[in-house]
Image 1 (cartoon, rainbow, N blue to C red):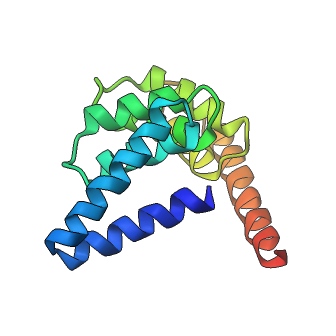
Image 2 (tube, rainbow, N blue to C red):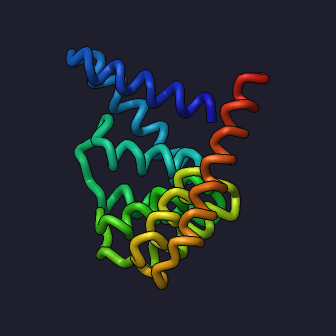
Image 3 (tube, helix red, strand yellow):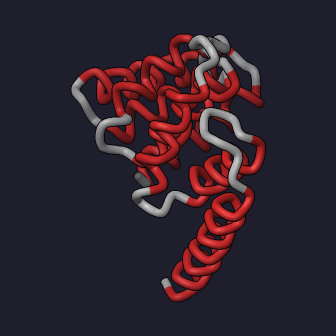
Length: 157
């Protein structure tokens, strides 16, 4: 994960520089990321989805982003959450709150903070589920607690 994150940071910095040598490096890095994604590497699939979602090294393409998130979503909580976000907002897919809830729940089962927050919002506003403010508050508390645990654990490293 650190290697791919480093690659994306390098891509972002290179794109900002804006010269031909840099553009060639970005193209090569995207090609390497795509190769790993096509081999089934879930982190690479997620990262490639992020490239399309954010327009990093490629043209913005929410349809392509959703495709790569979907490929990684079977095993990767970050991708489950981002795919849920695509369905929730209708980015690259038809807006579908029921499908969004499905993916948010999958990621929330891994205590994914962002997914827990999205689920909380869905219950608070009745998007894809019956409105339930108590459940929304419970999920938000769980998200805040998990976020605090994540921060504490990251300081210990």
